Image 1 (cartoon, rainbow, N blue to C red):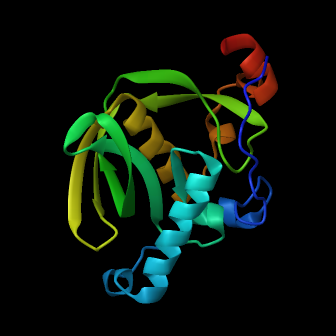
Image 2 (image 1 turned 90 degrees about the vertical axis):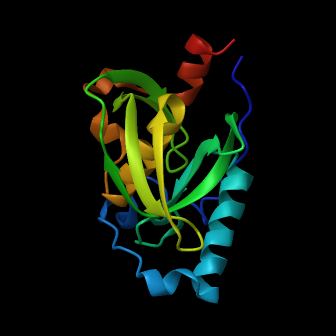
Length: 180
């Protein structure tokens, strides 16, 4: 039996086919980060992500072509717990040579699951929601989330990463095959 998923408000999350998802996003100017308008935008992103029960959300998915995303990262006080972090102008480096294929969903096309190869670990440098420089060494699930969201900033979707169309399936089929 398919597990229930919260409905996605398609007026808040850009869906497959909308041009904003295919345009490389522009960097956020550091002086813009602390403005009330930008802070309100980040708050809105957090609200959309929370209402969607996702683990990441990129600005292009909420119709804004800027290099910012939210992602579930290890909590600094308890690395076993994940917390949603704001990453502005992220730069990925130290990508592991080891890759791993995993099924991924996306809030921009929740009807599909895609088998995507990703680097197992990486380093990400970014500005946080207050404009402070941060760096994180990530592996496993958080590294995958960061790569997925960073792809959105480059106009790349998971369906572009599938090695064959057989690696793109309906979510209901995934649930029937892989979810207990």
